[in-house]
Picture 1 (cartoon, rainbow, N blue to C red):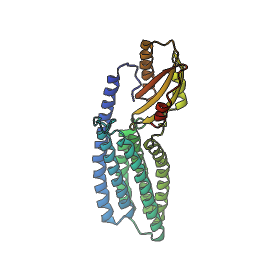
Picture 2 (cartoon, rainbow, N blue to C red):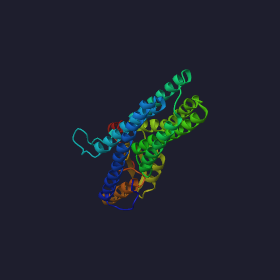
Picture 3 (spheres, rainbow, N blue to C red):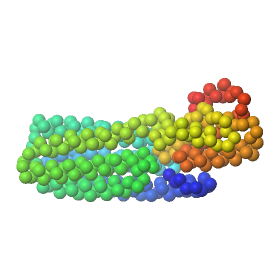
Picture 4 (cartoon, rainbow, N blue to C red):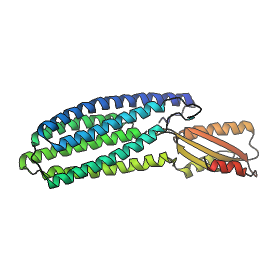
Amino acid sequence: MSHGHSNSHDHHDHHHVVELKHVSRAFVIGIVLNISFVIAEAVAGLYIHSLSLLSDAGHNLADVATLALALLAFRLAKVQASDQYTYGYRKTSILVALFNSIVLLVAIGAICYEAVQRLIHPEPLPGVTISVIAGIGILINGGTALLFMADKDKDLNVKSAYLHMAADAVVSLALVIGGVIIYFTQWYIVDTILSIGVAVVILFSTWSLLKDSLRLSLDGVPDTIRVEEVKHMIRKAKGVIDVHHVHVWAISTTMNALTAHLVLENSVTPEQEAKLKHELRHELEHISIHHATLETERAGQTCDEKICHQHEGV
């Protein structure tokens, strides 16, 4: 997200849209490249009866579906808000990230199952063909991962796509090494050992994605935001005595919201209050809180029990 010092909210939104166009293009290129590779890998796998190439083609196909879903989530995120969906469909980006991480866990299970079958029934494989096809996979998966690298920390779905493609490049590298070893030694168990190792790598990268997306889908506080720091920042503002009933949650994988009750000094005029709110919203934008609803009360006033209780439930 932009951390520019512009006071214009329109500028921020414009930057957001430009960034989405750039990311959408990366997704489209990634989908086209990877679907081409899946077809080539599946044909080669069927031709030489290579189970590792076929299972990798299946793994890559799952990733193409993941990229397509992430692109769909980006498009849905731009749908205008309505009376029924006051934030639009932005939350779909979080649900897709959650779905992606579950798909990856299923893929790990499939790889491990395949590996066990291989241990029981190893079969002869042409190492050179496996290495050549997997080598092409490194270029395509690695190249696609690079498309997402710059934006991977700005959005969960871009991070998910980056992790998928980087993991696929590692899988392809493992297959290249496996192919070379098989060619020189006919030691077919190497293929199985490598696939188990790859499954472990994917598991570690998926776990954090699963945790992040699950937390955001349950309206947990986004990982990059510390509520205590937010409170401290608000309390430092001139005229603010205290802040309470602070809620922070994610509207989408790139946008966050906050509601808070500010206790102001009795001397604060309505004009000063308006200025204070404006300045606080601007400061909050710098720490990735894009929608802030700030309610105020004066020192000595007791917060209306009923209203506060409702806010606790927001």
